[in-house]
Image (cartoon, rainbow, N blue to C red):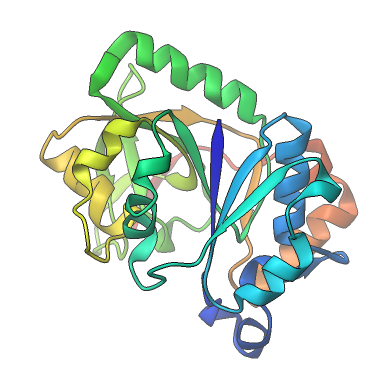
Length: 258
């Protein structure tokens, strides 16, 4: 099963650090964030990896090479880097005939991806070809700057509340946590030769226009965005304290009022 890692972001919220270092190469306790991901993928026997690179791509390619050091096979895609997250995946459609993972290379997470895949396969049995993908969702302690979701009892995502949230909006603090499993049917929702983003363009259109089914895999495992200096410090503390290794998030699901 292929795993695509979006590793071309510019890290603008990280200031000067993001200008000098490729965002996935920023170190947490002496090791690049992306290396934590690749080690986890190797541990769960997901060895077929495509790094979708862009900004300062040479740093990533030089460090990881073909992946032999980690017991994985790494390929690179550096084409059409301005096409957005979904647009770049669309360009790889010809090589994605089966279900595949999409991860974001700037996330620190300790998630059992095998369990997530089992949940995805169960959704496939339930919904068949209507299923376009399974999104990992979890409570967030910063809902104001996240895309939030409403999930029904069957696990289907039936509403998406995109950021920024208007004053007075009430919803759960369930966040699109940016780990996805897609079926090849997802490509019918992505136009060719357009710069498109999953969170901003594709998911809201699927849900609002009922173009297919997106399901939620709820997880309380460790996952943190380290896209700001403050969150980077939090992640470093989590690694040093053992919280990352334990794989526990410890954020309560609750209502969010903006």
